[in-house]
Amino acid sequence: GQNIDQPTEMTATEGAIVQINCTYQTSGFNGLFWYQQHAGEAPTFLSYNVLDGLEEKGRFSSFLSRSKGYSYLLLKELQMKDSASYLCAVGSSNTGKLIFGQGTTLQVKP
Amino acid sequence: DSGVTQTPKHLITATGQRVTLRCSPRSGDLSVYWYQQSLDQGLQFLIQYYNGEERAKGNILERFSAQQFPDLHSELNLSSLELGDSALYFCASSFGTSGELFFGEGSRLTVL
Image 1 (cartoon, each protein chain N blue to C red):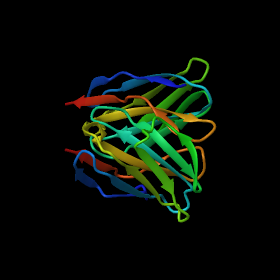
Image 2 (cartoon, each protein chain N blue to C red; image 1 turned 90 degrees about the horizontal axis):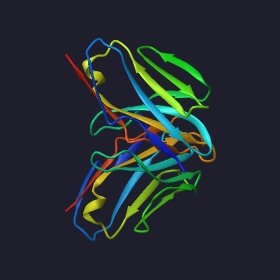
Image 3 (cartoon, rainbow over the protein chains, first blue to last red; image 1 turned 90 degrees about the vertical axis):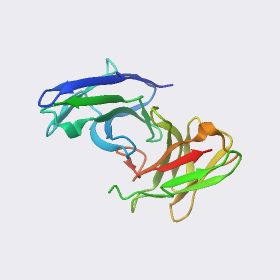
């Protein structure tokens, strides 16, 4: 089976940096995905890690350690529009389906 | 715009009824996935189709069924509806069986 854990809520200040952690246990790993979801809207893809290390994309970076079953999403220079839910998801090696964690609701304050 | 189209966007119905949700994947995508998201809950995987055939099944209730047609669009049928079935139902697609999923805007189902 698969188990994915991430904090339920986080709060940060505009302009700051925030790190959202995700730990997972899975059988059949085919990558770690991060999605952003604003309330009532569709999830949108942020990043994908399949090998260990850091992937950087603008203000967003994602890190993966497969041996530790651990990933984090780093958001820099926070903006008010970054207030959203951030979903960690593990890809299945057999099918491609993604299994999602419960999501971390990030509130950015002025 | 992800290129994935879902209809209807909103649906209100009564307990015991049956509804059908429709999904058109991005052009060229062969895989379609269905997810359920209840209030304040994460995305729960329901079922996946690849090129017309069922590929993976999650915790999908027996009252729910789905299929993928030759033109690759998919339908999710929900029957004997209960209050607890009220949720956002998302469809996603991908080209193959790995990589990024592209999500539609969702169908919000309210069961009264």
